[in-house]
Image 1 (cartoon, rainbow, N blue to C red):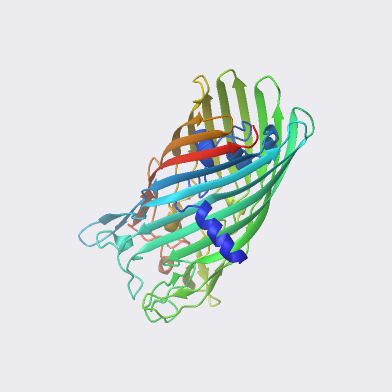
Image 2: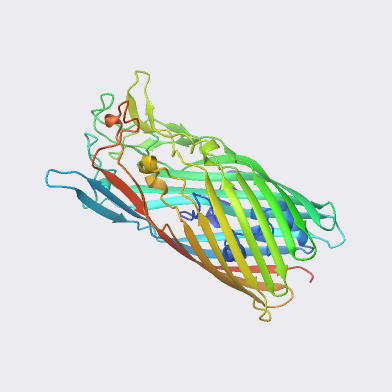
Length: 447
């Protein structure tokens, strides 16, 4: 019963191919997305505040519930080049995944005379996914070859992470609050082909030519917490800081199947969610609310992301399975501005910048997770229907602003001077754009 409930919440509250910064959502809900994800020191709505700084929920003195639903579209494109006797042969493959839903659910309750505020949330905070069909005009998308010298054929990934948080904030004074938020997470991952499993190629360990297997959808439970500080000067300036610990997961247990339908060996893989440090600055004056956030995402210390390269058998030969993504730490800048000069119709604009976690030497390993957005732009607004009801909306557009590029890698090319097995004369790259429309509805009780 508990597993079915978690699966239902996962489908309700998370999305695939939604990653904006690494594989991390830049914001949660229409209001927070429209501010570029900035809310560590500017708590404009309960969803963004619960996501980025539990201490700041102390600013909400009512019982509020909020639901956001968005439609998200991404367009990754995969390119590759290989040398041939007639010269380089290049091609590209378009993703055909389509539109993904993106809901978020949150609730906060507090009282003006109380120092205690509580909150609960269910957010899809992370995801990636691609669907690149088999393509005879793009070398990387060629069908798998029994000899291991073909492409990957149909490439598909589907990763989703649902986080449920229980937040508590305490006002140490009328200006300073602290907060804590224990979290429980449910993640699901599916890969085709599965690069975490050793392929069955004749050239590798006496195989029979079945290639890489595909996985079923495996799931895992993880735990973590977030801690926050919030300061409101009382004259417009606000400061905030939070630290979200790494979310530690149990291993995914993959059941693998070869393309001919025969069973392959099971594979276990642990992939945690990275720790995130957030620092925020907010300023409110008259009809203007300004927010700026800086985040640091620690991929290099995260299980599943810090490891890279090929796995080796006990005899010292590479198996063809990979160790992990090999991602680097990234920085994220979020900035947003809200204008409240129009009665009952606040307007917002937001911008988000993210550095790229993918090292060009290891770009080949991240083909299943190409959702890297460098620049994102948002425009949003709200309409205050009554004292109790409010409707929010946002439009988002993001772009990778250039390709992530590296060489194709093959363990048969490994040497002391070429530890990753880079194949001379080859290249693989990917880029993408994203767009989204989201609408939110919030209700304030007894106001």
